[in-house]
Image (cartoon, rainbow, N blue to C red; front, side):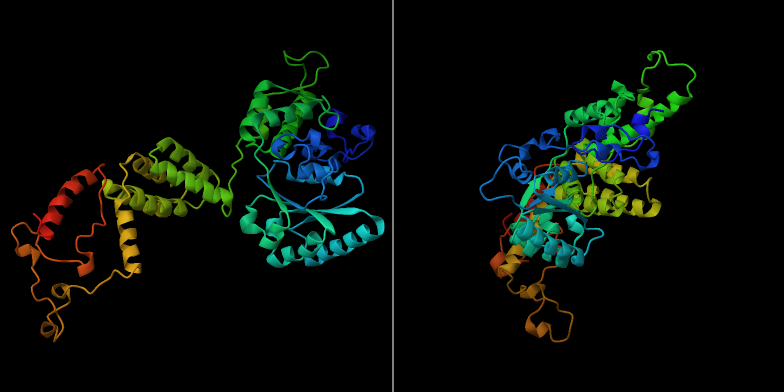
Length: 473
């Protein structure tokens, strides 16, 4: 096997000689490919160009441009594998910088205060700026985040915090107000493609020890989900498979000449990566964004988009009971009496999931989604109850008409309760002309059926019913 792939290599830094593997080093301690390929300057960073324009906070922080107010603390928010840690390490290479890295998983208030004390000393005695990289800041408690405030506000440290969760919900307001929030976007396919090609050829990467077939390249791009780290990790695993097979092969394959580097095929890539990365956080933005898109697709009658979002939630391990509950709400809110069977289908799907569990539960869920997405839509019942509630809250809730009041207890008759009530079953049409709402709501229409589905017939019947009840027919 090629020593350029499996010998140990520490972070190469800026020393070209460090790109060559040191002889005799342990193969087990070699840094992962994603670490070795980490950019050393902002110009090597792929993607995120909206954050890397001349004079941008990141370039000022990295020491490449000068800002009038000096470097600002920043919070990097984005999906995994989009370059948050990479940007922090590039910033750390600035002149007169002390770089300190903490993980919110293991660090506590004591660790933060120690960094603050040392940073203040470095600034006042040595003129050095301390860059504090805090990974997964959303895991810090409020007290731990509050411990950062004095250092950030007085610029004892320049904080570079990374998070995959929306900082508006996971970072305390005082820290947000003292930092710049920079949103990182998922990498484009072309960005990751270039990164894979560079990793194959670069001395810090695979150094030409293997070749990457177009089919394998496309497979890695299809399944990495815009995650550069996952793409490079999968490439390294696929290269290991290819080199292992090459080492045991008796003869070169037809597409290889004598001494040619082994070719990473699609089969090698599939062995390394056989399932796409699903960006989904059951407690974060993705949870709410995907289910929002799911319900809006059903409401918009796009059954194919609704199936896509259902698949994403299922693959990400979302609780199927949560999905079923959302379907029940959608059936009542967006379909209503335009198709009364929609609510029955949603409730039946929820019961089926409880009975059979997953993965088979995906089938009744899909059936319910297909039913709801293709059903006629009406929110008439939903808007009717909200309008009625609004009137009640506004004080429009007069006394119940006397003839509708309970007349079954002793003395009710003397109060006039039930006097004059018309029993509807005694009427030839089964509908009686009499007042039902309080006086101030007589003639108020809350329910307005849509001209779709079964509500078209309901609207015709409702016009007749209201005419009889109100004495207008």
